[in-house]
Image (cartoon, rainbow over all chains, first blue to last red; front, side, top):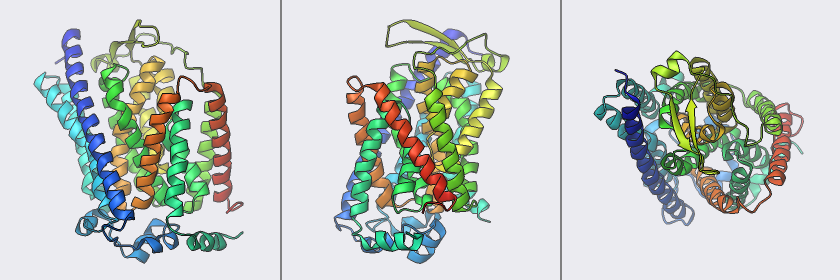
Length: 144
Length: 294
């Protein structure tokens, strides 16, 4: 179904407003989380899994060598270490990377409510792409 | 100095020197990126990859996230002011994000030297593009839209804040546009760059979108396209908090200050400075990739 110009304008306005609100709130929370977590990490309030003094010998290694040398998990394995000073920072990073998912859900609801089927389908497809990436499934497939 | 000596020297320094240096470097990058009108990500990866001791894998991971965060910080204002179109961003972002995932996944199979060499060439090309880019007042040629663009309703209007005038827009060449955004997404995912340098010409010159709307919507597209690539880097293990957090905070703070300085700083001087920075960093990372300057 093709929307007329006024309907489309209203749909766009509602979806953009919902998306903008979601991004603004999400980004503010993510940045606050990252600041607090960084302070907890470098101040030693939470002890890190990989000692800070060891980092200069590790951060110049290729990623795969670093993971092996520091014995740290890839994928969602970090969740088990989230109480450590370094891995607690991953909560803020994961939150930041998830904001787009939440914002697309908000926009999708507006497209569905206004029966803009084409854009509802496109937003749903984008959500599938984002969720596939966030699941770690694609990393697993690519890594064999 | 050999690479092994460099590693030994940097490892001997106290760990905290590097995150502090990174914060201040990223603060400056944030300021000049806003003043020059280019994304911070495109400066971050070659400069931090060249002059800091971190492996390129971790720099690219931080670069993807940094471009994502910077684009997200600007998106709400652009959407509310009507200077970014969600309707226009959605189809091209879908094409871009699928290929940004492929680029990110492919990047871990490419040897570091090859990645550095191609990154150096890309940055030098971007510097050339920046040098010959049209002035911000340039207007894209907007002939009638195509059937695909019309079917998606890719048209609308916005108010230009510079003169308060109502401007109409209508997208054209949607299919070539989708292909362009797929290629840009792949390159962005591969190198961990934001892609404002390529999104704006793709919107403006290829799809006939007015430059202001193209620039605003480009930021929105980066905030979508970089999200799945960020997940790939994150879950692969290519993000180190000690690199990501100071970089993010430095760039965000720098961008905030840069936005305040925007009216008083001479744009042409800043543009030349950034151009020199891109040329230097591009040459450095190219020579590093070729094994001529480690």
